[in-house]
Structures are given as structure tokens and as C-alpha cells.
View 1 (cartoon, rainbow, N blue to C red):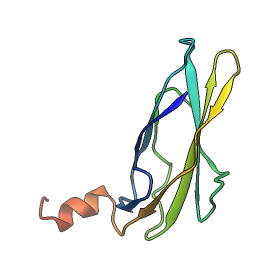
View 2 (cartoon, rainbow, N blue to C red; view 1 turned 60 degrees about the horizontal axis):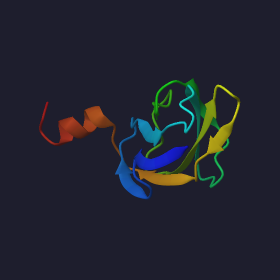
View 3 (cartoon, rainbow, N blue to C red; view 1 turned 180 degrees about the horizontal axis):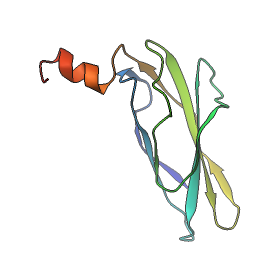
View 4 (cartoon, rainbow, N blue to C red; view 1 turned 60 degrees about the vertical axis):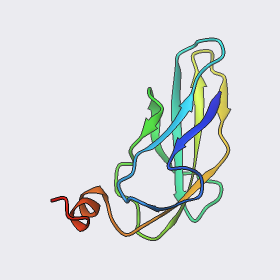
Length: 109
């Protein structure tokens, strides 16, 4: 089961370009769960797999996100019995900077 408590929050704006995606998930039977994360810019039904068989409820896409773009993402949880649960689709909009640039711009070099 996939639960609320995800980051970035649904509808967030000015999300950093190197953001990590995270969510809350568990299995009602206590089975081991792995996650597939789908993320895509401009598509409300994301189909690009950016993390496959993640053992933890977090995913860092392999490359930075594009600036000033709308992204949509969802998570598919799979347990040891082969049962799947798909989250709703969440969205966020990126800003202009990654975490390193953001720290520099705020005077924390």
C-alpha cells in the first residue's frame, strides 16, 4: 500500500533540479516490497522508469531535472507474492537551481 507523505509534495513549485523523490509505503502482509518509479515531464501518465526495484521508498533520478518544467510521477509497489499497487499520479514544477546552486545563491558557500 502506498501512503501520503511524499516529497516533493503534490503541486510543489520551485523544486530543486537534483531533488530526491520519496514516499511512504508498506505491505499489509509484511512482505518485502520493491518500488518502481515513473517520472516524466509534461505527461500526466508518466511512463519513463527512473528507478527500478528500489528497496527503499526513495528515488534519485540519474540526471538532474530540466529547469522550469512540470513533472508527473507515480510509484508502483511490488511485494514478494507478485502483487502490485500503483499510486496516484503526483506533480511538481522545477525551479532554476539544484541544491549546490541554491546554497551558493543564499550566501552559504
